[in-house]
Length: 302
Image 1 (spheres, rainbow, N blue to C red):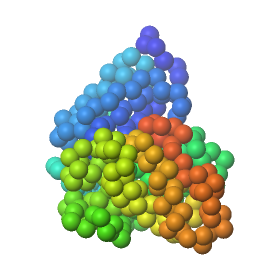
Image 2 (cartoon, one colour):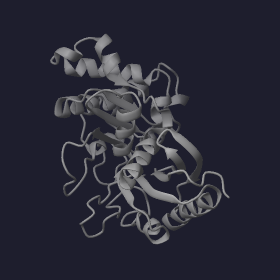
Image 3 (tube, rainbow, N blue to C red):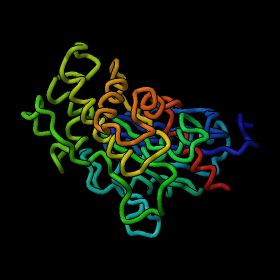
């Protein structure tokens, strides 16, 4: 008998611009097995994910449900034509791809779908930095930039939030760069994502000297997004994750610039001590979205 038979097993997929993470678990925070698959062409990437779960079931037993958290924009409404399809995305070759279909065809189990940042927000609210709070916003700054609030304010409408494509005020030191977003040019993703940083400085943020202007420029753009989220949604906490935040001092610079942008307007965020408590790194590290997706799978079983 394979290890794990008799337990209630669930699976999750976190699909990102750089990698897909597949996991099997018996609870959101107790992973039994995981695999990282580099993101390349859609068919090869998704086929590898399906094969992981086929093999994992041989080793551990039947999976009762799957939670999928994928980069967007996605059609999330289960009653809409094209449910599970990526809409127009900056990721080359992925626009129009139905990321849900290969799993529906391979596994006769319930599958819950969300955007990656939505699952990450849920993971951090229920099991991470926001545990015990009523609400939390999550922003990821990596290959792309996205944001979500948990719990969602309403039922899924025609479109989920795409916070990474908000336009921001340009830094005077950065006026020469047009931005890389194929849809908007200089939206926050077009200016502050990992590929945008690479495009104008030929390296990632961590490789630049500590006194390089890039650190303040990028922090300023993310701070504009942070201040906008605070003013629009008033979450109990803002968690910022993603590879770009690995640069030394990045989170501290974002906090300082967010405080300056808010200008003392909000009493609960009017000094650095309160901003430091409010803007946090993810307590679950790189696992925020996979944990949220696993919880979604449990909800599908229950």
